[in-house]
Length: 349
Image: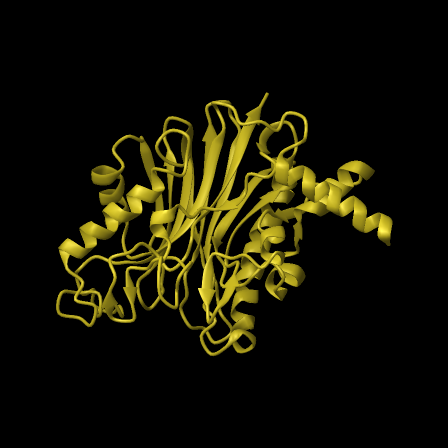
């Protein structure tokens, strides 16, 4: 048992320090990121949607000036995520309409040639998932909304499935997630996230049945941590250290998926703080193909919670937490109640 633990610790040290051959940052290193945009609403009250509080006359007093300030804030952080003024892919959730993403990339992130993949969801509040991608590096092949049917048939966010291709003909399957919340308590709501995990799992299995060694990137706010049942029992996302150990044994399984956030979570770090406890709700998960030295390859040790100083609460009871746009109905003028996550990849040929 001591020997096994020692091996695990050595491997963790390796991928935390990047001390593995060919794992070095290069000019063509790609950054893939995810951020919960925390209630990125326009100022218009949509019929049939519960978005009335985010209007000029609603509880939040949400004005065009406040919206522009939020877009400016978010863009400031986004432009710092990559090597060239922004990440190469950024998944996002809690966005009301694609027009807001259009405004973000057109007026606030002008230095990148971003394209958008987006679908409206049936969510009662009208919030959706979206993806921006560097059009100089990726071609958009398809966008699909995967419906999640909850046990109580309550409408929730679709999973966004985006298929991209590089100029070297590498296909990348991206799933952007925002799983059902923990409203009512973690245990009571667990079945809803398990259903979302089942929907995702089914689609991953379909890709694996049709394509050998596919590049699959799963990103999102899952409202569960890597050690919850939706991941361990349903999605069966494994810790990255399992893959590193199996390299040693040469018995890695092609169809496995690996959670890059697992070790960060077990070290009690997280992207969102609730009642003094950190939760690793925002995660990046990859297929086996993205851990090998051919095509997309994860840069070992590059996964991180992205938290530049200006998006962190500096004082008071929430010191160290993400600085949000609102605290209840009080306008704070911040960013999001979640920290973003990112990981770096290189393409080998």
